[in-house]
Image (tube, rainbow, N blue to C red):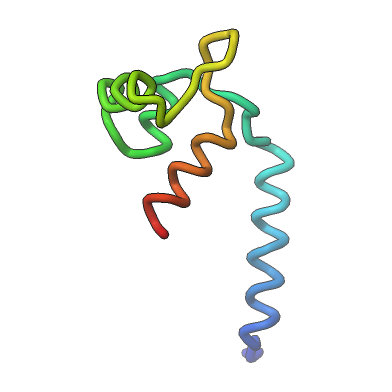
Length: 77
């Protein structure tokens, strides 16, 4: 049985996350249903956020992932 330090455990987890992200890269933009799932809210809430200007649709009618990240950061700040 080997003892693993916290630093070694963090490195293993970081490598696992990197590998997972390589297989499933983050999208650059999402539709309103995906945004609702990512923010754990209803699609109607996303519609309200768009109407209120809290989220903005791009020219394709999609939400850039940076806006999702900003909304998550604001929620947990």
